[in-house]
Image 1: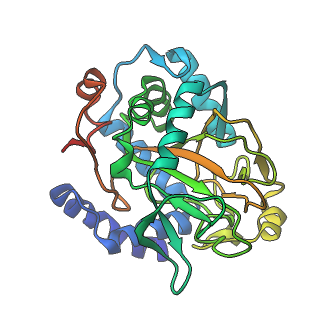
Image 2: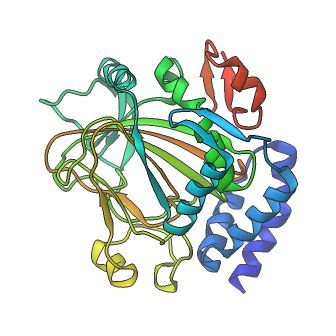
Length: 327
């Protein structure tokens, strides 16, 4: 009955989205509830419909961060993600890009998680100072990120677009780019900093790309993931919120801690249960992008940029880069 109730809210709202290109708040709530009530089956069926309506780009071979990727290679990686929920690449991000983005992150101010009253993101921005850490997380404004050439080059990478298309089954949309520092902060802010197990559900179907820009070990915040947990949600976990390690592992088994050197790149379906492990020492710099099959869902700001450094990809893959706007 609950599923039928939320469908009655959600399906008519698609007309509103189609006309306004905006998701009403009640529609987004219904979308999350449909995922929870059906254990993910609603998302799978809707994604199949979207794939048939939108279709794919004609890509046989792509070139980018991982060299030459053929259609068979892209499908192989997509199948690995479908099976396990993630794929870790053997290739590493080039050192010059790591150095440039790291330099950018130390010279640009970032928003922090404000823990003084109600948890919120600060309006004021701060430079990260290892000797005076103010928050467990320093997040850079997306408007600043596209101004960095290295970040833009990664954002327009054709290999990533190619693989995302195979996994999502449709011309993908790049709907978010993020960069943040994580720092030790006792036990404060672990939930706000996504350091407790949870699932993401901002879109119908999506795929996240992560890059470790610092070496990551057991003490400084490895990404933790429950393999195969993206396939369906057990009834005991069908609710919004954060979950303890003990509860998650009693139902889904042991989690994987991804401890890897800087430059490590991975694709993850964070519909599966995951978290960032709270840091006890050092700092971690992480870059993230998200591809989705539709913009129905959480509101995401556009990415203004003064110059498109890859005009060929920008014009060739219009649906993918529809949120990138010249300012």
